[in-house]
Image (tube, rainbow, N blue to C red; front, side, top):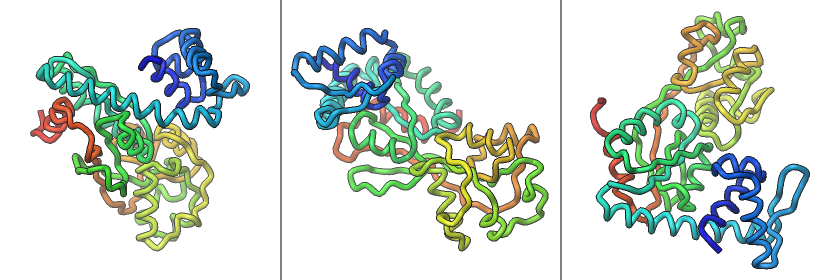
Length: 295
């Protein structure tokens, strides 16, 4: 059993699809299928059910997935230790971030980091707040960047930036021309929401609760897995939503979205680290760069 086989198995398990795993790993579909088949044959155990064009974990596969992730996390830690001995001259830094952060805030910092440490490879995965926290907990990411609060005693959380949320509608929406928007107006509106577990949705629900609106009573017409589909659906007139200003600023300037005046709290972007896992110099260097003065 090799680490490469484990990486392939985990990629297939997480995506429940051989072709998508092959694309993510930059491997051929046949190579991915062969690696999985080799694992199953060597240990005489079926790890996946073949379901149509996709796959689903068997009970043995579900049990093995946790162990495979743990082995890969230990291997990543060992690699980080050796990379540190080289004085930031080589190595890999694994980062996972929420969609808003990964698309609109983090890239400029990663570019600056690359200029300073060109031999360090940074891999960036994207997930919602819950998924990012799970990756840091499992050790598949050393740093996680999220907007939502995480209540996990094993994860250390530190604020690294502030973000502003805005209420958005289509320009011809009934709320768009209002001089003020009341909480009751929001309770009566149709909503386009991010999925449960997203930091944006968590902050919105907390703000609505503070305004006396029960989030469970909202008329949610669409629930979508990322910012861009939400923005597009609101532009198309599906309803109101709340997104980061950094996500919708171009559309607001272009006039394809309106921002009715409703006060929403700012939120913090946070970095998550595991309290007990090895802290690499590469991760420390990235966080020091983020904390430093602009430019």
